Length: 375
Length: 237
Image (tube, rainbow over all chains, first blue to last red; front, side):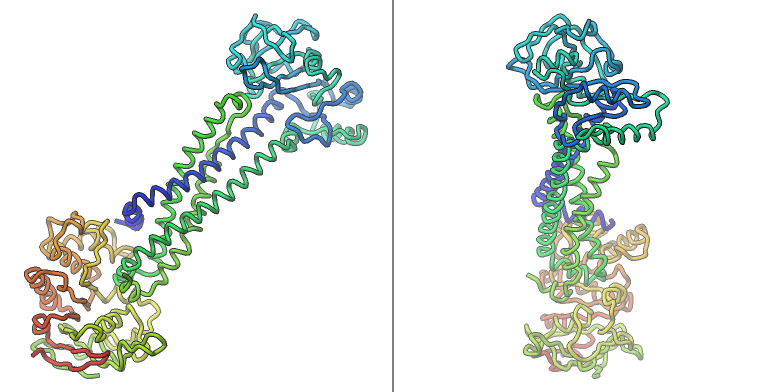
């Protein structure tokens, strides 16, 4: 027998209360795990899509904070950018979330400059690439094909226009696998935004250094007022949706932490009150105040850690459910990591110790004689 | 300090326990649980503390057991004052074994674990604690009940577990508060035999609070309390 096994026995003594406390902690931790993994996943999905294309810098409107920046007329900016040293290619991108038929969830539609480097990272699984920039054709990512139940040779309707599915592809980025892809010209036509792009992707040549990239950013800042050249990471971190999602996860962590600590606090205080005489007995048997504090902290830690472990499992299940939800599928992949789980367990430890500290102190300060007289 | 003779027991020169003008007050002095108590107990003595309810017996036992601190006066253990000792828990753990009327066993632990409880957190190895607990329970005739829950034990068995628990840290002073009060006469006699036997076999000092005149009669000395004072001290009638 040791302190931990004694603490476990004490928790088993009130199984319903222990289970309820553990469930409440687990729910809070599950909310933290689900929201945080989704928020990070949302950020990472977009960054991965940008990174997969091999883009070095992205030029966008400086003030735009949307998930996909506001469209702007591409031609004058593109001409300016193409003149900067080490800029190998400037490729326009237009994106919109559109419904494909009435029964399907909205889906990302990407328009990429025809023949640009943006297409190079995709793996064509079936069919072919568009024959030219004006062909009313689309390719479907693997997940989009599955969601839409379409394949090569089928047709899909977008904003009242009919497109032939000429190919399916696979990307390393989830967002692209869940998207419909067409040429930039077709995307501009179907969204009624002729000549406009959300971003211009810059690919620098092989000799370009980080200093060259910084030079291009500086040139854009000086020569193109209202525009900014940024990395994909900067684009994603500016994204208002990402920031809101992360802020929500932070608030959830705070609320879950406070509520969890309060629940542990309440449970341990009730337990201490019920066991006042027993604590008096332990004191009479020679237990030091520190040992009694250790016992109470140990009980609250076991509760919080067990709640944390169950919460992680439930949180992963919730996040997986959200990933598979029709509206979310193909847009977000929750991100987990060992450090993340360790941090969540760390949060559990903090709320266990935080919630158990005062009850432990109170138990340790009991007068043995008064505790033994307690009814 | 007054000291009565200890009927037939050879006494050491230095009393194991001494109380000098000890008082215990509550409610800012309005309630006097003990008032100027003064006595000594010798090594190996069996002292019964008797008296009506509210006379201060349990308060006196709490003070002797370092569960409470006196409002005035001093308590000595082998000549050293301990009532102002900062680490009374360590003192209790090292020198005193408690036996309570209602046993106070932990229901989630087995008999063996209950006996090991006072040794938890001490420097003994787990194996040494276990061996000693098993040996004590065997001495109490509970060899086959080591892993039983207290809830499945009879009252007499529970009190024997409690006595084994009181002995695990090898104390020199056993304080028993009505240890037979919750037992039938057969079990009460058995428990009393164990406690009395501790003196003979281990040379322990036993101070026992009791209402039972039969038990008082078997003590070396009886201290009769009334209204927080010693009414009479001496050999049992």
